[in-house]
Image (cartoon, rainbow, N blue to C red; front, side, top):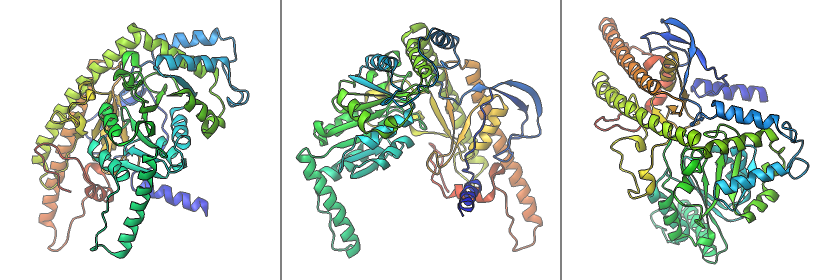
Length: 538
């Protein structure tokens, strides 16, 4: 019974091309020289000449500063392990039993000082820390508002929480956030005699719940949590934190407002010495930013996560956060690696230089990709009149014509993040082509991202050379040329077949770029961002 259900579920994902599988990251691959980019989406381009195993340029991992592979980081870590007084292996228990040590406490004191926080609590992973925050802190009846693109770990924590209300708002949309806040803070009679009795009953029940919350909030008996990321992991854009804080403080009493900022992707990349976006914007002193989360598994090149908060919140998490209570404590080796990460960030010749290189490479890549996207829109709109979906697109925040909202938010003047998503209906063929050209990238599809937002997620690193960045842009353009040429050949073949086919019979065409017709039909039903000057018709 269970086996049949699991097989059926996996088969459904396989049919929808959303099945996940583990792959071993290989820094070398057999590059292929070919002009055929119309291979099936789950295969590599065929028909070319193998050039032999060669290193792949990393444009996939979260190692933004390339610290995980730097000699300085590796040598510092090995030195700490060899000079360790305590066992660098297993911690032997949870921190509430025998797993705690003076080294855990020392690291937390150092992290609190580095990230300008009153106190810190270290976890084995950022996921574990996020689940702890959202499952433990909200009290019965509280309200959690969350950006619709918040990380899965926050959703897992919210599902376990005792909060009375969990409501999402549109990504980085301050108008929508204000709309949701008003609906809980103001009590408005929206009843209409024209609606059905069942709908009126539903609306009245919802209004009653919100009215109860609003009255309790005025008496300071309820809390409002707002969950955001400083840099979003899939879109790479920044949260307009100063504007969000100012908006929230207009509607919610300060003592009842608790903003939780996940800084997983801004740790190491923003702020002085990589202390994160909040420190860079001078926000740690804000009473409204209750909790920050910094992680070590991305730009810091190590592993683990740390909750940055006040001492009372730290003590509460130690007592009520189940992932912390029932998990084996991080071993000494993890603590040593975290110390090494901070050492590297504090060194201007390592952390400072690498942040500068990362920003320079990111700006160069955006320049390359904007040109390719414009080129794809220009030739694609004329070559495929019956299908005006953009072959490539950038997320709104990365487009040159993007008008940021709010316009005066300080985050609009900051450098772009190293996360550059390239939206395309064909993420697998594009990623296969780029890997065959020597660039390690990964396709990201539903359910990791919303339906219709499939992409190739490109991550820029300090260790990427200018030649690699330009080569990546050239390879993307080469793929565009191949797809357009493939469409022209296919259209020509269809015309010939239609001319010779008997009247009344229709030709069933396999989907674009080797995609099955069923998958293509699904894609045609999905929304897709339009490009300037290109009409989108699905």
